Length: 133
Image: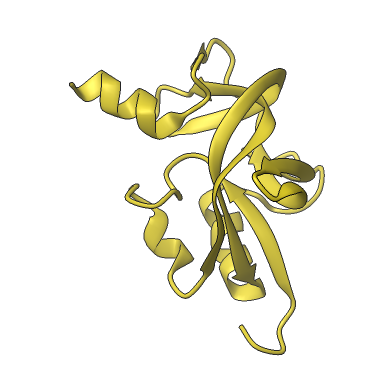
């Protein structure tokens, strides 16, 4: 990633370490292994979560990614550009809380999943493991 523009991306679902889409972050550096953003984590019912606007905490990780990786993640998240009606998720700038203080990050959020079940813990990995035990 030398001499390229990089971004800090907060991941909270299938992109987290050990989850099904983590391979899309290959070559990216985990900048912060434990972080949280404000919002409400929901189970979409499709095997992946979404973050909605809310006052809770959503837990995840922060990765330093390059432009190529950002394009791959945009494709995964069905993100076509700011405000595009085809977007399943919006890519937004937000603030993540970490043990080093607040950090500006990108995150994918969506209000498209009507009736999705809130995940009170705010932690997709913990929720998924509890469902399978």
